[in-house]
Length: 281
Picture 1 (spheres, rainbow, N blue to C red):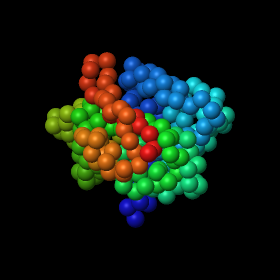
Picture 2 (picture 1 turned 180 degrees about the vertical axis):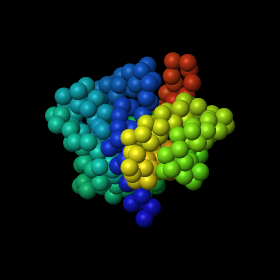
Picture 3 (picture 1 turned 120 degrees about the vertical axis):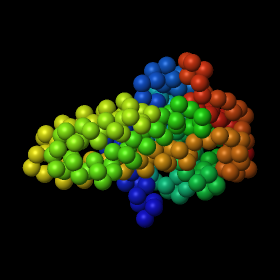
Protein backbone atom coordinates (compact mmCIF):
# COMPACT_ATOMS: atom_id res chain seq x y z
CA UNK A 1 0.00 0.00 0.00
CA UNK A 2 2.77 2.45 0.89
CA UNK A 3 4.50 1.94 -2.47
CA UNK A 4 1.20 2.34 -4.31
CA UNK A 5 0.40 5.59 -2.50
CA UNK A 6 3.89 6.86 -3.27
CA UNK A 7 3.46 6.16 -6.97
CA UNK A 8 0.06 7.86 -7.02
CA UNK A 9 1.59 10.94 -5.39
CA UNK A 10 4.39 11.09 -7.95
CA UNK A 11 1.90 10.64 -10.79
CA UNK A 12 -0.02 13.69 -9.52
CA UNK A 13 3.28 15.57 -9.26
CA UNK A 14 4.08 15.09 -12.96
CA UNK A 15 0.54 15.11 -14.38
CA UNK A 16 -0.23 18.54 -12.95
CA UNK A 17 3.08 20.12 -13.89
CA UNK A 18 4.47 20.33 -10.37
CA UNK A 19 7.69 18.74 -11.54
CA UNK A 20 8.35 20.91 -14.59
CA UNK A 21 11.82 22.38 -14.68
CA UNK A 22 14.67 21.41 -12.43
CA UNK A 23 12.98 21.25 -8.99
CA UNK A 24 14.17 24.80 -8.36
CA UNK A 25 11.21 26.88 -9.60
CA UNK A 26 12.15 30.48 -10.21
CA UNK A 27 15.84 29.93 -9.51
CA UNK A 28 17.04 30.89 -12.99
CA UNK A 29 20.70 31.22 -12.05
CA UNK A 30 20.79 27.87 -10.26
CA UNK A 31 19.01 26.08 -13.09
CA UNK A 32 21.46 27.53 -15.61
CA UNK A 33 24.39 26.34 -13.54
CA UNK A 34 22.83 22.89 -13.24
CA UNK A 35 22.65 22.71 -17.02
CA UNK A 36 26.34 23.62 -17.17
CA UNK A 37 27.10 20.98 -14.55
CA UNK A 38 25.56 18.24 -16.70
CA UNK A 39 27.26 19.54 -19.83
CA UNK A 40 30.58 19.23 -18.02
CA UNK A 41 29.76 15.71 -16.81
CA UNK A 42 28.88 14.70 -20.39
CA UNK A 43 32.50 15.38 -21.28
CA UNK A 44 33.52 12.21 -19.41
CA UNK A 45 32.35 10.08 -22.33
CA UNK A 46 34.45 9.91 -25.51
CA UNK A 47 33.16 6.65 -26.98
CA UNK A 48 29.52 5.60 -27.51
CA UNK A 49 28.12 5.26 -23.99
CA UNK A 50 24.85 4.32 -22.35
CA UNK A 51 23.91 6.28 -19.21
CA UNK A 52 21.10 5.56 -16.76
CA UNK A 53 19.19 8.51 -15.24
CA UNK A 54 17.70 7.49 -11.88
CA UNK A 55 14.32 8.97 -10.92
CA UNK A 56 14.45 10.85 -14.20
CA UNK A 57 11.14 12.68 -13.95
CA UNK A 58 10.52 14.63 -17.15
CA UNK A 59 14.02 13.84 -18.41
CA UNK A 60 15.65 17.24 -18.06
CA UNK A 61 19.06 15.72 -17.23
CA UNK A 62 18.78 12.98 -19.85
CA UNK A 63 18.04 15.53 -22.56
CA UNK A 64 20.90 17.79 -21.47
CA UNK A 65 23.39 14.93 -21.60
CA UNK A 66 22.26 13.83 -25.05
CA UNK A 67 22.38 17.41 -26.36
CA UNK A 68 25.86 17.95 -24.91
CA UNK A 69 27.53 14.83 -26.30
CA UNK A 70 26.40 12.88 -29.36
CA UNK A 71 28.25 9.81 -28.04
CA UNK A 72 25.76 9.47 -25.17
CA UNK A 73 22.43 7.68 -25.14
CA UNK A 74 20.37 7.88 -21.95
CA UNK A 75 17.73 5.64 -20.44
CA UNK A 76 15.78 7.37 -17.70
CA UNK A 77 13.79 5.38 -15.17
CA UNK A 78 11.09 6.59 -12.80
CA UNK A 79 8.55 4.90 -10.56
CA UNK A 80 5.88 7.37 -11.68
CA UNK A 81 4.19 7.65 -15.06
CA UNK A 82 6.47 10.29 -16.57
CA UNK A 83 6.02 12.22 -19.84
CA UNK A 84 7.20 10.52 -23.01
CA UNK A 85 9.97 12.03 -25.14
CA UNK A 86 10.80 11.81 -28.83
CA UNK A 87 14.33 13.17 -28.47
CA UNK A 88 17.03 11.17 -30.18
CA UNK A 89 19.10 8.92 -27.91
CA UNK A 90 16.79 9.48 -24.93
CA UNK A 91 14.32 6.92 -23.59
CA UNK A 92 12.22 7.43 -20.45
CA UNK A 93 10.75 4.36 -18.77
CA UNK A 94 7.80 4.68 -16.39
CA UNK A 95 6.92 2.34 -13.55
CA UNK A 96 10.52 1.31 -12.82
CA UNK A 97 11.76 0.91 -9.26
CA UNK A 98 15.36 2.10 -8.88
CA UNK A 99 15.99 -0.87 -6.60
CA UNK A 100 14.79 -3.38 -9.19
CA UNK A 101 15.66 -2.31 -12.74
CA UNK A 102 14.94 -4.43 -15.84
CA UNK A 103 18.47 -4.26 -17.23
CA UNK A 104 21.34 -6.71 -17.70
CA UNK A 105 24.41 -6.72 -15.50
CA UNK A 106 27.06 -4.11 -16.41
CA UNK A 107 24.81 -2.65 -19.11
CA UNK A 108 25.48 1.03 -18.38
CA UNK A 109 28.59 3.18 -18.77
CA UNK A 110 27.49 5.88 -16.34
CA UNK A 111 24.75 6.99 -13.94
CA UNK A 112 23.17 10.33 -13.08
CA UNK A 113 20.39 11.69 -10.92
CA UNK A 114 19.11 15.15 -10.11
CA UNK A 115 16.96 15.38 -7.00
CA UNK A 116 15.86 11.76 -7.34
CA UNK A 117 18.19 9.00 -6.20
CA UNK A 118 18.04 10.15 -2.57
CA UNK A 119 14.32 9.32 -2.42
CA UNK A 120 15.06 5.62 -2.66
CA UNK A 121 16.35 3.15 -0.08
CA UNK A 122 20.08 3.85 -0.36
CA UNK A 123 21.21 0.30 0.35
CA UNK A 124 18.82 -1.34 -2.10
CA UNK A 125 19.38 1.27 -4.81
CA UNK A 126 23.15 1.00 -4.34
CA UNK A 127 23.10 -2.79 -4.75
CA UNK A 128 21.05 -2.54 -7.92
CA UNK A 129 23.06 0.32 -9.39
CA UNK A 130 26.30 -1.57 -8.72
CA UNK A 131 24.81 -4.49 -10.66
CA UNK A 132 23.86 -2.53 -13.80
CA UNK A 133 26.98 -0.32 -13.97
CA UNK A 134 30.20 -1.53 -15.54
CA UNK A 135 33.35 -1.25 -13.39
CA UNK A 136 34.89 2.20 -13.62
CA UNK A 137 31.67 3.85 -14.78
CA UNK A 138 31.39 7.50 -13.63
CA UNK A 139 28.38 8.71 -11.69
CA UNK A 140 27.13 12.16 -10.72
CA UNK A 141 24.33 12.92 -8.31
CA UNK A 142 22.72 16.22 -7.36
CA UNK A 143 20.81 15.57 -4.13
CA UNK A 144 18.77 17.74 -1.78
CA UNK A 145 20.74 19.56 0.92
CA UNK A 146 19.14 19.36 4.36
CA UNK A 147 19.69 23.07 4.99
CA UNK A 148 18.51 24.36 1.61
CA UNK A 149 15.81 26.97 1.16
CA UNK A 150 13.91 24.46 -0.98
CA UNK A 151 13.60 22.07 1.96
CA UNK A 152 12.65 24.84 4.41
CA UNK A 153 10.12 26.46 2.08
CA UNK A 154 8.47 23.18 1.24
CA UNK A 155 8.18 22.25 4.91
CA UNK A 156 6.34 25.54 5.44
CA UNK A 157 4.15 24.82 2.40
CA UNK A 158 3.26 21.42 3.84
CA UNK A 159 2.04 23.11 7.04
CA UNK A 160 -0.23 25.36 4.98
CA UNK A 161 -1.67 22.35 3.15
CA UNK A 162 -2.33 20.67 6.50
CA UNK A 163 -4.27 23.72 7.64
CA UNK A 164 -6.33 24.34 4.51
CA UNK A 165 -7.48 20.73 4.24
CA UNK A 166 -8.92 20.81 7.78
CA UNK A 167 -12.60 19.98 8.31
CA UNK A 168 -13.66 23.56 9.10
CA UNK A 169 -12.38 24.81 5.74
CA UNK A 170 -14.11 21.97 3.93
CA UNK A 171 -17.42 22.71 5.64
CA UNK A 172 -17.57 26.38 4.64
CA UNK A 173 -16.38 25.59 1.09
CA UNK A 174 -19.01 22.92 0.49
CA UNK A 175 -21.65 25.23 1.99
CA UNK A 176 -20.66 27.92 -0.50
CA UNK A 177 -20.09 30.48 2.27
CA UNK A 178 -17.55 32.82 0.69
CA UNK A 179 -17.37 35.10 3.71
CA UNK A 180 -16.67 32.21 6.10
CA UNK A 181 -14.07 30.80 3.67
CA UNK A 182 -12.32 34.18 3.53
CA UNK A 183 -12.25 34.33 7.34
CA UNK A 184 -10.89 30.77 7.62
CA UNK A 185 -8.12 31.54 5.15
CA UNK A 186 -7.34 34.83 6.90
CA UNK A 187 -6.93 32.97 10.20
CA UNK A 188 -4.59 30.47 8.56
CA UNK A 189 -2.60 33.30 6.99
CA UNK A 190 -2.01 34.94 10.37
CA UNK A 191 0.03 31.95 11.57
CA UNK A 192 1.62 30.84 8.29
CA UNK A 193 5.26 31.31 7.33
CA UNK A 194 4.35 30.97 3.65
CA UNK A 195 1.64 33.60 3.36
CA UNK A 196 2.06 33.57 -0.42
CA UNK A 197 0.96 29.93 -0.45
CA UNK A 198 -2.14 30.76 1.61
CA UNK A 199 -2.99 33.57 -0.80
CA UNK A 200 -2.48 31.29 -3.81
CA UNK A 201 -4.78 28.60 -2.39
CA UNK A 202 -7.38 31.14 -1.18
CA UNK A 203 -7.68 32.58 -4.70
CA UNK A 204 -8.02 29.13 -6.20
CA UNK A 205 -10.63 27.95 -3.70
CA UNK A 206 -12.60 31.18 -4.08
CA UNK A 207 -12.75 30.84 -7.86
CA UNK A 208 -13.49 27.14 -7.61
CA UNK A 209 -16.37 27.83 -5.24
CA UNK A 210 -17.93 30.10 -7.87
CA UNK A 211 -17.34 27.67 -10.75
CA UNK A 212 -18.57 24.58 -8.88
CA UNK A 213 -21.85 25.94 -7.55
CA UNK A 214 -23.71 22.71 -8.28
CA UNK A 215 -21.20 20.17 -6.98
CA UNK A 216 -18.84 21.75 -4.50
CA UNK A 217 -18.39 18.52 -2.53
CA UNK A 218 -16.93 16.83 -5.60
CA UNK A 219 -14.73 19.85 -6.32
CA UNK A 220 -13.41 19.76 -2.74
CA UNK A 221 -12.67 16.05 -3.02
CA UNK A 222 -10.54 16.72 -6.10
CA UNK A 223 -8.74 19.60 -4.39
CA UNK A 224 -8.05 17.41 -1.36
CA UNK A 225 -6.76 14.59 -3.57
CA UNK A 226 -4.27 16.94 -5.22
CA UNK A 227 -3.30 18.51 -1.89
CA UNK A 228 -2.70 15.10 -0.32
CA UNK A 229 -0.53 14.09 -3.26
CA UNK A 230 1.55 17.23 -2.88
CA UNK A 231 1.81 16.71 0.89
CA UNK A 232 3.12 13.21 0.28
CA UNK A 233 5.80 14.56 -2.07
CA UNK A 234 6.79 17.30 0.37
CA UNK A 235 7.03 14.77 3.18
CA UNK A 236 9.21 12.54 1.03
CA UNK A 237 11.48 15.48 0.22
CA UNK A 238 11.89 16.27 3.90
CA UNK A 239 12.91 12.67 4.63
CA UNK A 240 15.18 12.44 1.58
CA UNK A 241 17.18 15.63 2.18
CA UNK A 242 20.76 14.81 3.12
CA UNK A 243 22.78 16.41 5.93
CA UNK A 244 25.88 14.21 5.68
CA UNK A 245 26.62 13.15 2.10
CA UNK A 246 29.54 10.92 3.09
CA UNK A 247 27.25 8.88 5.32
CA UNK A 248 24.62 8.70 2.59
CA UNK A 249 27.23 7.51 0.08
CA UNK A 250 28.38 4.86 2.55
CA UNK A 251 24.82 3.53 2.60
CA UNK A 252 24.95 3.07 -1.19
CA UNK A 253 27.72 0.53 -0.62
CA UNK A 254 31.39 -0.07 -1.18
CA UNK A 255 30.98 -0.27 -4.96
CA UNK A 256 30.90 3.54 -5.17
CA UNK A 257 34.06 5.58 -4.77
CA UNK A 258 33.62 9.34 -4.41
CA UNK A 259 36.06 11.59 -6.24
CA UNK A 260 34.38 14.83 -5.27
CA UNK A 261 31.70 15.99 -2.84
CA UNK A 262 30.77 19.66 -2.77
CA UNK A 263 27.93 22.03 -1.94
CA UNK A 264 25.98 23.43 -4.87
CA UNK A 265 25.07 27.02 -3.94
CA UNK A 266 22.84 29.75 -5.29
CA UNK A 267 23.90 33.30 -6.23
CA UNK A 268 23.61 34.36 -2.58
CA UNK A 269 25.94 31.54 -1.52
CA UNK A 270 23.12 29.66 0.21
CA UNK A 271 23.21 25.85 -0.05
CA UNK A 272 20.90 24.26 -2.60
CA UNK A 273 22.18 20.73 -3.05
CA UNK A 274 25.07 18.32 -2.67
CA UNK A 275 27.08 17.40 -5.74
CA UNK A 276 28.57 13.91 -5.57
CA UNK A 277 30.86 12.68 -8.32
CA UNK A 278 32.69 9.36 -8.42
CA UNK A 279 33.11 6.01 -10.11
CA UNK A 280 31.85 2.46 -9.80
CA UNK A 281 34.68 0.44 -8.23
